[in-house]
Length: 307
Ligand code: FEC
Image 1 (cartoon, rainbow, N blue to C red):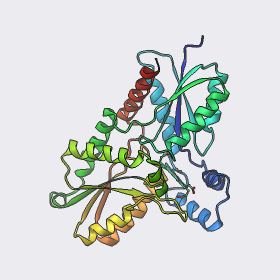
Image 2: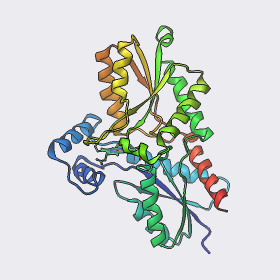
Image 3: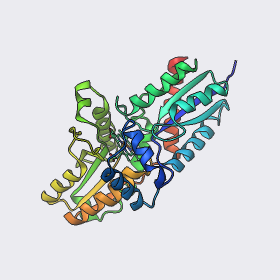
Image 4: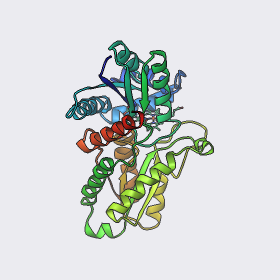
């Protein structure tokens, strides 16, 4: 029997060049080509962050460190990357594991909070592929309250608070955020909003932050209603209330990518300067060792549950 445990590390994926943006966007839209103005706008956002997103490189680094950390005590783990919207796709990674003779695997998504429309989609694809390949696969559903994850974010918040003057800190709003989703998830009793609030409350309580709120960001460009309030709307309201300082902490994301480097660092930053607000954001976790430790803890939790 093959004793190697496969780890399916699932990530969003990003185009590797501007030429791949159309194929990528078409995949996100479930095979529907984007209208030209939307495609041009998306290409413009990638150009604004330097042409490509660093997401694939960060995912590779996270995978390398995860395998290294898992194998410190017991070298029986092999990490495979499977992506939602770019190659290697999730099902390809599962098939590669099976071809390598892996019989048992644990899957985890590089997104800490569970939603049927995000993590649920990754895990469904992975489980279907595993069933076809006759491989045993169990997936972590969420890891938003792992101590190591909260420790890493706590440190990022402390560092970012230092960027404000003492006077600014007297009236500063901390805004936790995550990717918005269509409002219809609420009718499904989706745990996503509550899990995000759990992480926000835990961090606020660790840092004794009273003045905080949660906002949604990066809503899709579709006709249906998306969860709000949107971060930019919140910023406008804060300016009207006399706030001059805002610290953004995008707890739903673990890496630097378009939704952070464009939506926060460019779009929200421009909005803030128009509103007279000093805007900062917490640095992304990327391949921070505590982030990796959080993944390891969540993987071991699932292993204990299945053994
Ligand atoms: O850096 C990069 O190139 C990739 C950045 C990226 C991340 C990301 C994470 C999440 N998304 C989630 C949900 C949706 C839904 C739609 C949607 C659309 C896009 C588009 C781009 C994009 N997303 Fe994404 N997302 C990233 C990039 N996302 C580009 C298309 C243009 C646009 O709307 O901005 C709407 C799909 C539809 O049209 O039907 C829904 C969620 C996450 C966080 C969890 C995760 O990482 O999986 C949820 C990173």
